[in-house]
Length: 87
Image 1 (cartoon, one colour):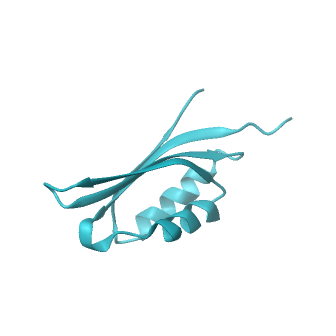
Image 2 (image 1 turned 90 degrees about the vertical axis):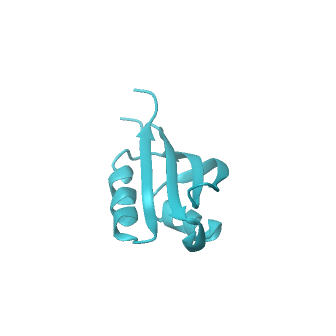
């Protein structure tokens, strides 16, 4: 069976004064078998949150669980969402 690419929309939020750097975020995401695409940034000034959004790609859909576990273990992560796209 041929491997199938899996895509997900990924969003993660931090407090404005405790934002993970972009290189650290890339390292974290790539360490779980994903590649990042279409990275965007958003500052929610009224509530003091900084948000990264991107598309993730992997050949193993199970990598989402690994990424989720790493994010849950990081106290700086206030909120995240990993939403698979397609089938």
